[in-house]
Length: 354
Image (cartoon, rainbow, N blue to C red; front, top):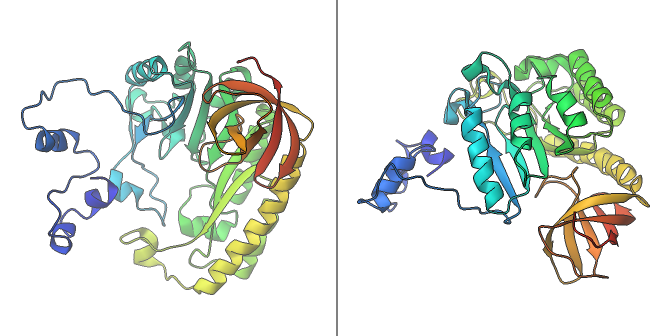
């Protein structure tokens, strides 16, 4: 069940006849009926968390209408569809009652939330309503789209203490040549203006972005422009990957994957080396500062925690020395002792829970 079987439902049974049954991404009722033939389909099936009990991902929309040249998501999930605010808030309340205090808000296109339901972008309204749930402490936003960005979310991020000063916004590239080929609906100048405005309106924000190298037609000059952009913008968090052709996308149909794999990898290594140095500089600025963290777990040598600027799995962690006993799921203030490109070493400066 999931994206693969949603997209290749007809092909997979022939290739893997030993599989008992196939279900698409949204076939919830069908799989329940298969597993439990006598079940009540009207029952309210609550989420079971696969994340630590204090943290959860919350999907507020599904699908995408952007149709970027390289992306298969619209082919898998279909058109953009928002969930109603009331439904989302009710789920947040159930998660909070289970002990969740950190929400990672996700959608394939956060920027479009609400347009299909309310005829306007309503991300700011949604996040404000979520923040009213008492037991929620951190709300972090993932996967905003740069074109048609909902600027009314910025005052909420700046002024609401529950909303983390963190935004994941995949930019993919900066060269107008590549952006046009990617069908990204935004120019280099518009991208720079967007990033500057976000940072001006939300002081201290940490931006995470994702970049792609080796897209069809990316010249040496395009890549040099991308490197200069990374050095100029100094993203607090950045990931990159090489272009890989996805079947039936615009790029697969109409563009030639004309860049050698070795060149793609070389470009990826170069840009990530630049980012590692930037990340180390930014991390080093935190040494000596007192920062609030959320403890995720304990290992043999440290307690492992994150700041509001760090999303689970993909961002730096804070390694806290075991001077005092800490409880995973609780928040503490720590003093940063040492910085590495993608980790911080800290000690507790206040053992009281926040």
